[in-house]
Image (cartoon, rainbow, N blue to C red; front, side):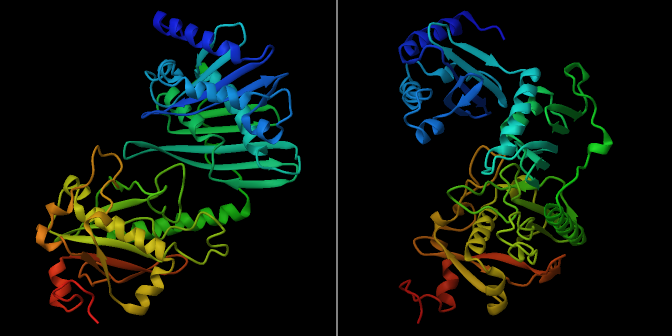
Length: 457
């Protein structure tokens, strides 16, 4: 990729600034993934005699002359932000693009914007590195194979993977691609492919896609590679998950008309809890919108997923938290109005409380009905993916005196004429839990709060 005169001049200034910090005979790199909203990666590493060394190597081997000064160089690059920020070189690139910056003493820096051929070379290296990354017994790499499916989800790209790696010490399967960011770069570079298949057998890489790109040496996906061999434990868990989804989907259809586009939730991370499937590669936290004959139901679609980690359910006994939760509106409400509605944000907050509780199903079974009290700030409004703003706040639903300065809340597990109380899934019977908001007036009317706002004795 040819660089503009402005960028070339900027690269010369960066080279001059870094040169005193570079060692003779070393080649340094930064690998950056440009995303839609920023970038990731960028830690500096070096290549010496064909082997890569990271800052982790320097921390583990502080007296190694090869990597000595690597962390200091990384700090120099960090301190350059502002006047000589290297991100200015790639900020104008599209999302899901991989960039490599290269530095060597006495030479101008280089910038590689990776094309498909570059990405193929990266994939080959990354597959083997990923397979051996956390091993401790120095196994031999035999083979790794994966089939990847792409799906747009609320303005983001969902990546669904089945992967099997064979080492001399054993075979393992999972849902993690070799490098999610790299796989997304293939999606971008190949104009939004539907599926990607790769297999590294020894040192021989085979890549196929749907559709194919023979001009890049990537043929049309062979139907025989739509599914791959999986280890028995992963295969059993994968089947159980598919069956839970099938049964739940078929049941939702019996309630009414299921709108084709779900609502994707933005949960996980430091603010909230991921749902049982808890994928880092696609959105597993989803709401479905269903029109019954006289109402609109917004219902979770995934709280009863199978736990992806055997550590959470080693014997495959549970359909997630044992419940799905919903809120019901009178009449038919448009998708856009429902998606932005305060009560949908409230529903999300109730699900977070249920997950954090740890045994919500038993709590409901022991008590039949519950109330959960909230203050205005307890409801997370920035919870819907694919929107540019927060959900509507509480003032669009309640009058101020009904929620402030006192609490408001939600009834949990009240009956509905349109939704049964329970549903039998593949591993257990789950609860279908209705969520209904109430005002602070109810708390005092029913003696749960005194007129002064104190909890009733």
